[in-house]
Image (cartoon, rainbow, N blue to C red):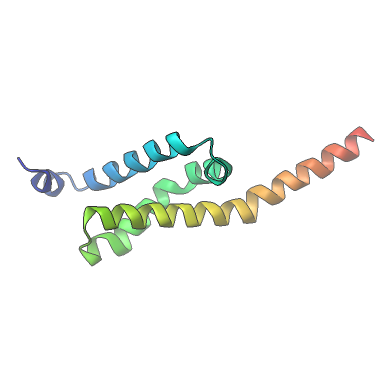
Length: 104
Protein backbone atom coordinates (compact mmCIF):
# COMPACT_ATOMS: atom_id res chain seq x y z
CA UNK A 1 0.00 0.00 0.00
CA UNK A 2 1.49 3.36 -1.00
CA UNK A 3 1.83 6.31 1.35
CA UNK A 4 -1.02 8.20 -0.37
CA UNK A 5 -3.29 5.15 0.00
CA UNK A 6 -2.46 4.99 3.71
CA UNK A 7 -3.36 8.68 4.10
CA UNK A 8 -6.75 8.10 2.51
CA UNK A 9 -7.52 5.23 4.87
CA UNK A 10 -6.20 7.05 7.95
CA UNK A 11 -7.22 10.73 7.62
CA UNK A 12 -5.25 11.90 10.66
CA UNK A 13 -2.00 10.33 9.45
CA UNK A 14 -0.76 13.45 7.63
CA UNK A 15 -1.47 15.56 10.69
CA UNK A 16 0.34 13.04 12.88
CA UNK A 17 3.36 13.09 10.57
CA UNK A 18 3.44 16.90 10.53
CA UNK A 19 3.15 17.00 14.31
CA UNK A 20 6.01 14.51 14.74
CA UNK A 21 8.28 16.36 12.31
CA UNK A 22 7.69 19.72 13.99
CA UNK A 23 8.44 18.28 17.41
CA UNK A 24 11.61 16.55 16.22
CA UNK A 25 12.77 19.87 14.77
CA UNK A 26 11.81 21.66 17.99
CA UNK A 27 13.71 19.10 20.08
CA UNK A 28 16.89 19.69 18.11
CA UNK A 29 16.54 23.48 18.20
CA UNK A 30 15.07 23.88 21.70
CA UNK A 31 18.19 25.28 23.27
CA UNK A 32 18.57 27.93 20.59
CA UNK A 33 17.03 31.24 21.61
CA UNK A 34 13.57 32.13 20.33
CA UNK A 35 12.29 28.59 19.95
CA UNK A 36 13.24 27.83 23.55
CA UNK A 37 11.39 30.99 24.62
CA UNK A 38 8.26 29.87 22.76
CA UNK A 39 8.44 26.23 23.88
CA UNK A 40 5.65 26.37 26.47
CA UNK A 41 3.33 28.42 24.27
CA UNK A 42 4.05 26.14 21.32
CA UNK A 43 3.34 23.07 23.44
CA UNK A 44 0.03 24.51 24.62
CA UNK A 45 -1.24 25.57 21.20
CA UNK A 46 0.21 23.30 18.51
CA UNK A 47 -2.53 20.65 18.38
CA UNK A 48 -5.37 23.16 18.19
CA UNK A 49 -3.52 25.17 15.53
CA UNK A 50 -2.77 22.06 13.45
CA UNK A 51 -6.43 21.05 13.67
CA UNK A 52 -7.64 24.52 12.60
CA UNK A 53 -5.17 24.75 9.72
CA UNK A 54 -6.07 21.25 8.57
CA UNK A 55 -9.80 21.93 8.83
CA UNK A 56 -9.89 25.32 7.15
CA UNK A 57 -6.90 25.37 4.82
CA UNK A 58 -5.32 21.93 4.57
CA UNK A 59 -7.88 19.90 2.74
CA UNK A 60 -9.42 22.83 0.87
CA UNK A 61 -6.19 23.84 -0.83
CA UNK A 62 -5.17 20.31 -1.84
CA UNK A 63 -1.64 21.32 -0.87
CA UNK A 64 1.36 19.05 -1.05
CA UNK A 65 2.64 17.49 2.16
CA UNK A 66 5.59 19.89 2.28
CA UNK A 67 3.38 22.94 1.85
CA UNK A 68 1.01 21.62 4.52
CA UNK A 69 3.92 21.06 6.92
CA UNK A 70 5.25 24.56 6.34
CA UNK A 71 1.81 26.09 6.86
CA UNK A 72 1.26 24.04 10.05
CA UNK A 73 4.64 25.07 11.45
CA UNK A 74 4.24 28.74 10.52
CA UNK A 75 0.75 28.94 12.02
CA UNK A 76 1.86 27.15 15.21
CA UNK A 77 4.83 29.50 15.63
CA UNK A 78 2.65 32.54 14.98
CA UNK A 79 0.03 31.55 17.54
CA UNK A 80 2.71 30.56 20.07
CA UNK A 81 4.37 33.96 19.62
CA UNK A 82 1.07 35.76 20.14
CA UNK A 83 0.33 33.72 23.28
CA UNK A 84 3.82 34.39 24.63
CA UNK A 85 3.57 38.14 24.02
CA UNK A 86 0.01 38.50 25.29
CA UNK A 87 0.02 36.14 28.28
CA UNK A 88 3.32 34.55 29.23
CA UNK A 89 5.66 37.56 29.13
CA UNK A 90 3.30 39.86 31.08
CA UNK A 91 2.86 37.05 33.62
CA UNK A 92 6.62 36.71 34.02
CA UNK A 93 6.93 40.47 34.51
CA UNK A 94 4.17 40.42 37.13
CA UNK A 95 5.88 37.55 38.93
CA UNK A 96 9.17 39.46 38.98
CA UNK A 97 7.46 42.62 40.28
CA UNK A 98 5.67 40.69 43.04
CA UNK A 99 8.86 38.85 43.99
CA UNK A 100 10.80 42.11 44.28
CA UNK A 101 8.11 43.59 46.57
CA UNK A 102 8.17 40.52 48.79
CA UNK A 103 11.95 40.72 49.22
CA UNK A 104 11.94 44.40 50.30
